Length: 431
Ligand SMILES: [Mn+2]
Image 1 (cartoon, helix red, strand yellow):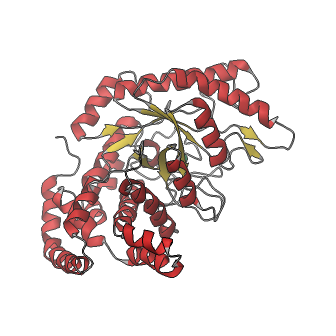
Image 2: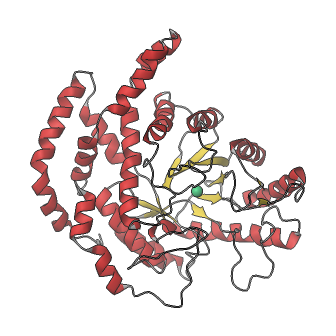
Image 3: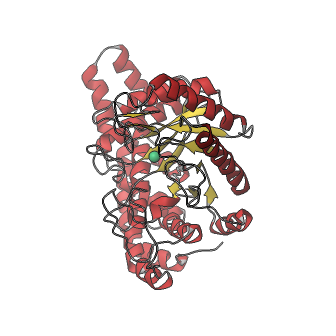
């Protein structure tokens, strides 16, 4: 298999840390055994957990005010794939990439797939982009895409989504994620119902183009770029559209696309109950931003979301197979470092949620013992599962300390030489 980081370097770094890890792992194993939890079961689950990297997350992000590009940024999808391979080799938990079109469009998708295959990277959900006009585009998305009042703009957006499905088929993807920036900035600008009807009619045409084994995921977002109303502003509009369109259409939850303090874990539970949870875009948010690093601000919220997901697994909820993906914008960090760290933070939430004793929790709930029910969750959250995550990485040939290895090999500096920046290239703001 093709590699970006020599496995001998990772092994050498791991060998320096393994003795301490073995000690910590054994101590944690003893502690968990006293609670009748087998640490090996958790380590196996951690090793199997995978979360996709968004291709656009490998470049430095920005805001609508400015973007400050870093050195050695990937300039095309092949270079983004290289960085994704590095992230996976070090973290051991990101074996797939989610592409965005037309940003990642190439002439020969079989060549791109072959390159990814050699890195052991899969392609997952393809993302369409109808929130900006492309050079030479015949009609504009300024006043919306799938819900535009003008049929020509709607048709262009529909065809773009159908094209994305074709690209995805060539890459081996199995789902299409649709987020549109459609909405309004002024009260009265848009007739809410008629706009939603146009959106649904457009989405129906895309749905008809889905292969039998594909899903379509709708992503809601409360605001931005439209600041008064958005066509799929919340999970209510999202699930209504998904139910209207059919069983292959599900809702996608981007953690940052909600009002502050929204109970996202309960939204997740509702979507699971009605077999409409398609997947996630993980990130964190403080105010109205939607692109901070996963778990950097609200790790307990992320844990509570995984508590619902693990509960669904435990109860063997039917049609439950959500797609996990990061969706962040890295403005001040090396994107590869943020993506490695964030993937592990999401994996951490998953493993902590596995610590919850479901039967005990159900008992506390049935007895209305609020405090003990709450502690069953909090005690799981408070346990440091780092040795489990590190051991899972070690056993997969990934790094015990991924960021340390990443920095020691000078990856970004070497990319700065290999990937000189085009001085004429214009970077988008929000990505
Ligand atoms: Mn998103």
